[in-house]
Image (cartoon, rainbow, N blue to C red; front, side, top):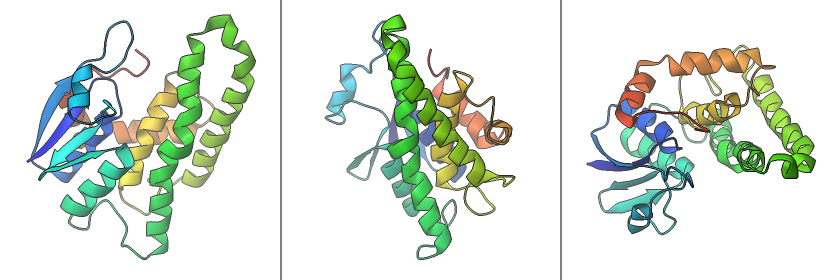
Length: 208
């Protein structure tokens, strides 16, 4: 049985979505952020030394990091779905997008969240942060174009990874200039498995 250690308003929501898309048997252990600090509770450190979510347990293995979890779950339980065939050009593109989500795109969005809390003291940083957010979103919008998915003609783990990025960007209105990304996000959020994951995970409000 897969165990997902799920923190509210966090990246673990994307893992819930993936588990629902896979139709996998899983159990959820819920954790709640501190109301003042917004940090994860210390109880998560008993699961993984970083004390962060998502973390899964499966067959004696403990796996952290969204990309690694998505890769593991799809290889183990996907049955050939949600990932292009290894060795193909599509698979290389898939891996690039899977790592882009956290390796590049999330950094300026996280900086924006923290700098926003500094008020006027953070003003000198805003031009560079906004420039990088725009750079990444422009890249995503150009790559997606009018396609339904980022890789191939069906949902993959790359989409599940990237939707969280777009949700984080949408909080500050950063998607307003990228209508194809807004349309794509709405379509992903309308998937049955996505909606089931929201029901299981509880209230979901990034930036809240």
